[in-house]
Amino acid sequence: MTIVLLALFVFTATIVKAQSSKPENGKTYHLVFQRYHADLAIQDMGDDAILTAQGLVWTETSQKWTVTVEAEGEYVFTSGNGRTIYFADGRFKAGTTKESFVLREYPGNGYPNSLVIGRKGSTNQSINPAGLKHCF
Image (cartoon, rainbow, N blue to C red; front, side, top):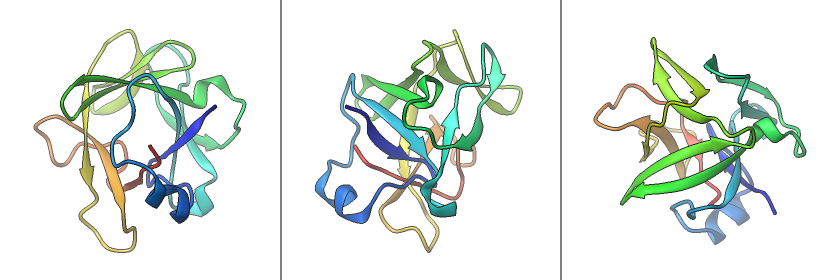
């Protein structure tokens, strides 16, 4: 079973409210942008390639992300292709480099119950600075 983790992330309000505010270790999610009718997902585009938003396809392996809890409040995201999200050269990429991220509440308006996947210690480097709606 795949669960949706939304990146200006969205699922539906009823599912979001029924779920925990933290992802579960070992569960697989889709990272879906809340904006644009929740039909764009973060996709692993290949080894050390920049992550992109592509049309959501539930069966697309490269759009499925398994969460590993590294420490309290720190998460590693691994694609269905076995690559992890990391940050290099000012961009978020997928590859063999392992980096853990934090989830922060979106500070803006218009996306209640939204989070951003951000770099530890940085408030301005996140996968989506406009917020991620969580569905864990």
